[in-house]
Amino acid sequence: MKITKVAKAGTLESNDILIMVKPNEFGKTELELESIVMQQFGEVIEQVILHKVQEMGIEGISIKAQDKGALDYTIAARVETAISRAI
Amino acid sequence: MEKLRRTMLFMPGNNPGMLQDAAILGADSIILDLEDAVSLTEKDSARILVREAIRTIDYSQVEVVVRVNPLDTEFGPQDVDVIARVKPDTLLIPKANEEEIKLVDKLLDKIEKEEGYPPGSIKIIALIETALGLENVYNVIEASRRTVGVLLGGEDLTADLGIERTKEGEEIFYARNKVATVCRALKVDAIDTPFTDTNDYEGLEKDTAKAKGLGLTGKSAINPRQIETIHSVFAPTEDELKRALRILDAMEEAEKEGKGCCSLDGKMIDAPVINRAACTVDQGIRLGLISGEGGAR
Image (cartoon, rainbow over all chains, first blue to last red; front, side, top):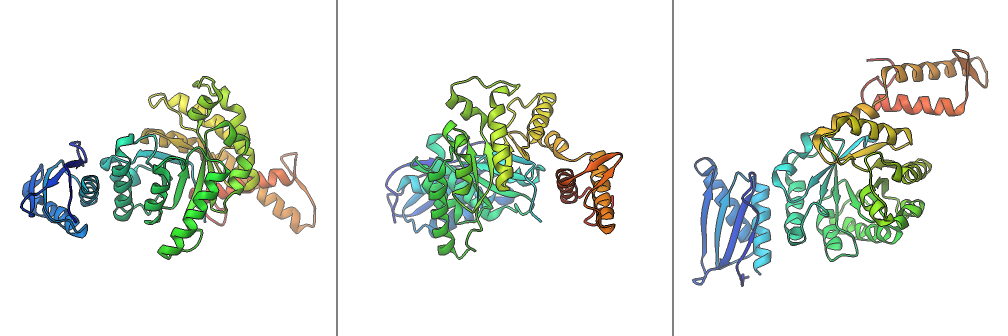
């Protein structure tokens, strides 16, 4: 499945993450991540985001994520919301 | 033994930090709110976040209640469908009337069957906040066997009545009486409206005592700082517990001697006094203030 428009979900408040998604014109999955805990949890956050994208069967998506210390459940929820809004 | 609902703490459904902390704030129940605390543009986001929170966070020490949106909006039925599938303990149904409760009951029957949950395992609390709902509260409760309580919504009710909501709360005297009486008759919990001034602890204590005095069994809270005050009002005092235990002892003695009634400190002990004493002792046991055998801890 492909997304058709730009959409975002989440906030920049602590414990949350702001996810912005847009269609990727080359059909790739690209992720740009900023996090206040990048050094400690950067890889895990990336995995959670990409796992959710895969689980939803999405291809051709650019994701920009600005993390303010969100737990996994919040990351997954915000990615799902952003993608649902972009379909 | 059934859990107490002395406090039901409202938590906004779209705030991850508050959802994470909700279980450890000391409330008996937490209400994860998808209705008033969430803006119209974030309803989808909050619904997914609350679903993930229930799936992930350890809420085993509290009752998890989710306030869904009204069933006559586009959001309400979606909320029920998404949230019930992760099995919260209870759904709080706003602007409740018979039709809404019957509809939710039917939706829950279907979801429980599809998900393999025991029938009737997800409970309902009716939020009474309209004049029609209040006058019909008996039938609202009777509309589903899942209904375990009523929460009185003073703000919306007074708005519906076209009257001013005051700190003293005289304007909801009738509503509190009605809800307390009907709930007692049908043996479900009667939860009071929140006290909205979160900095006035004296006012909160008075308001809670007023509700308790009218027969309400718990109170909703909008700030964790209100929990301790509400619990202290709803807990039986040491003197009340001691007297209740003495009454039950006196009754037991009388029964052994084959007497139909008895007296304690010169006053006759009859059925209503015994019932009240039994309720006090039961609450003391549930709060861990006395042991199951009745001895003081």
